[in-house]
Image (cartoon, rainbow over all chains, first blue to last red; front, side):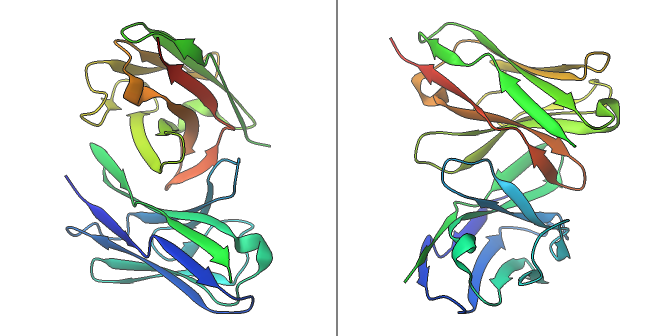
Amino acid sequence: DIQMTQSPASLSASLEEIVTITCQASQDIGNWLSWYQQKPGKSPQLLIYGATSLADGVPSRFSGSRSGTQYSLKISRLQVEDIGIYYCLQAYSALTWTFGGGTKLELK
Amino acid sequence: EVQLVESGGGLVQPGRSLKLSCAASGFTFSNYYMAWVRQAPKKGLEWVATISTSGSRTYYPDSVKGRFTISRDNAKSSLYLQMNSLKSEDTATYYCARKDWELDYWGQGVMVTVSS
């Protein structure tokens, strides 16, 4: 099975700061990587799909990148509404999908 | 507007069964793969099942394979999850989600508690 190692598990950052979260895949998954934001008590929301494509309605301060089997989510200027938990998801094979363990983002 | 509304959750004893439903609206249901994802209390997300557009292909992780069955009724724009032989570790909020490139729309979730 494909493993997704997400880091850090938690992160404290200041407003306007640049934030980066990473997911390391245990094998090649191409661009079958998406990022989700979950706010307290809410359902997850899609941020990034295809590793680098911004989902509809998502602010442009969010971006995704890929370097080999390492995937990153970057928030260019942290806003208060960005607080929540972030997850990556690999869907390379229809047979098995894997979420990363999550990153809890808090305000410093 | 795309809407996914889950129902059927509740408290169930270990070893018993429960069937979740997800009513879809605002899009052509039969054109999309659909999935179930769960989240145990204070834990992360876990993929539970995926179904193809026609329902002919289904996929599960080992943790639920043989116990859970995903199905759909395209005429009713509805998705289902039949959960048998439930265990305490199945306690979670269950979300249905639409799969386009990825999981682009999610329902609000329904809570399932497995306890005696």
